[in-house]
Structures are given as C-alpha cells and as structure tokens.
Length: 87
Image (cartoon, rainbow, N blue to C red; front, side):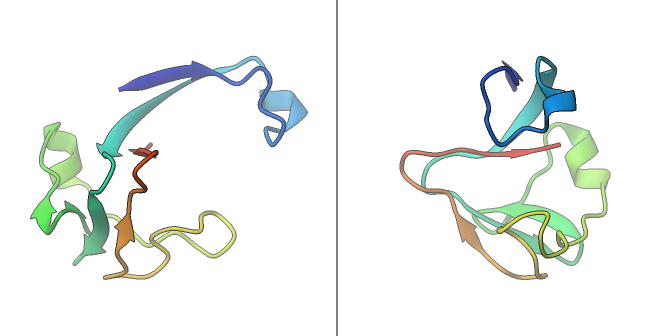
C-alpha cells in the first residue's frame, strides 16, 4: 500500500490539494499488467490478494482517464523506475 499527500502535485486540481490518497500497488518494475475477462492480471496470473481484487470485475479505463489499460487484453509493462497502483 502507498499513502501520499497531494500537496505540491501541480497536475492535481486545486480543490484536491492537501488530501491524502491510499493506493494499492498492483505492479512492480518489470511486471506485465492486463485485464483479461474482466479480471486484473499480473504476469498472466490473477491478482487474488487481497481477495477483493479477485472478486472485482474490471472494465478498461475510458480514453482520457488513463493512458494504460484502455482495452481488454492490452498489456502494460511497468517501467524499471515505476510502480502501478489501483484504486
């Protein structure tokens, strides 16, 4: 899990400055993340922990909301200097 405060993030709208965000890390550097049959996959395996991830039905993200995972089956490889969070 990752917790951060939005102060100083220029891209964050003014009304969201100063808030805390809690995100779950689903991808580490080099991981290949995709949505298959509405399920979140990491390196071809179902993301099952925490168990809520295995039960959720995922929809690809609409254009404009994210540059990643916009289509079912699309694979996003987490860069060597990055992480992928969800939620």
